[in-house]
Length: 389
Image 1 (cartoon, helix red, strand yellow):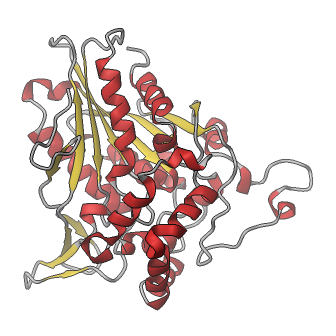
Image 2: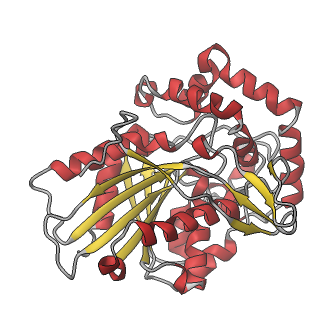
């Protein structure tokens, strides 16, 4: 069942969520708060009984210039089409798909830092503006609130959560899973699935966290250099965005569609362009490294199934932040004995060798499979959700 927003004439219902209010350690005695919106698609079960399961899929958007929850619009369309297929057998399963704007992106691009002492608020301009924990806190807050306000009490014991991430946002999904394992009572339902799409190599995920380097890079980007980059990216109606996306993200230019470029420009210009700070934090390396403990937490907890969705175009993304690391030559990437170095080791290979079994599903596209091949990606997600049911 599609829930339209008749006032805004949009395809999906967009709800104003309660302010995000989570304690952070820096600066002391403060909290982050932010109003944001998310898209919701509800696919009810044809039949309802005491055994009906409510499966909620939380879609974590990638981070980039002008990217927001709209990134998953095509995918939500495909899930709607799935719901209308008579031959589809999903009895006793309610399906809900949530696509929120991440903190610092889209409608959530204006996070405020509130002081518990004075009550004054100010836009955050110093690190940590956005960290893995900030993003995961926001999404866990949304998950908890959604269970309380949008799910009937009768079905709270039959909730199963599935988290889908894209690209470099894998650490956000891993952090939520680690927190769930450590704090079993943080959700009423069970976190059963992590679906990681277009994943980065294990070297960037498991390298040591360099917080000082991240802070320095972020300060640089938040000044003249970043403002110049943002202006250049949006000039000529996003000509740079289109060229960059074709070169580094899409398997084919036509996969992006006519809406990619204007959507990016529109979202990047909204709210006085304040979404640039989340992009700067991402480019500065906020999501780079520090995931070894998260992988270790998942190692012996098979109740959280991990699956990987990979675009069929396996070209590596040549784009590198010059703030973070230089590109390596092939001689540096391949060891003398002919084996792959950690730089080239995939997340799937790492999980199979070090943690647990994992299934990899190939779909169309390259770095944006949910947008490039929304049909194939939706079928892969549904297949994972219905596995064993």
